[in-house]
Image 1 (cartoon, helix red, strand yellow):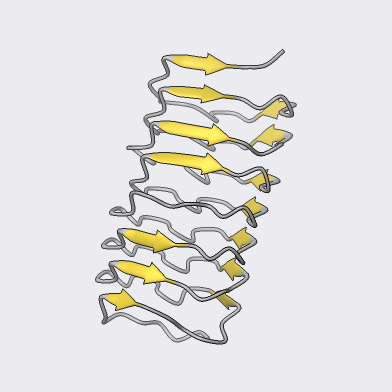
Image 2 (cartoon, helix red, strand yellow):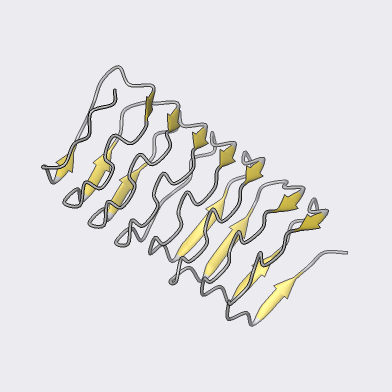
Length: 171
């Protein structure tokens, strides 16, 4: 489904969708979303939905594609389901999320996935990641993080411009 939607405040339910790509692109009045059982949040699905505050991701979602929630400046809370295996480039960039738990199912966090999340203070990485992507948490407000034992490589500027009090890097 490729038609853009601009004019309503709340989406309750769409049937027979598997993915949504650019479906709500710049839908500035959209405030809350409850999605059906879809397999992925497609590229730029909620790009610049500046009024989006509430979001429930179904347990069937396996991928959050690039720019999915880019500049959703009112989005404060998202629970990533245990089914997600990848969060792509700039997926949550410029959102207002305050905390994030990366579930163990996630195998890849791509470039700038959480960059410029100015209110992001707490991140729990439960995933067995091998690398932390370039600029992953660049320009956030992180004050504490524990890097998982599985990490072998940390990209450039992965944590640039944060307010760390505590960083734990396992031996």
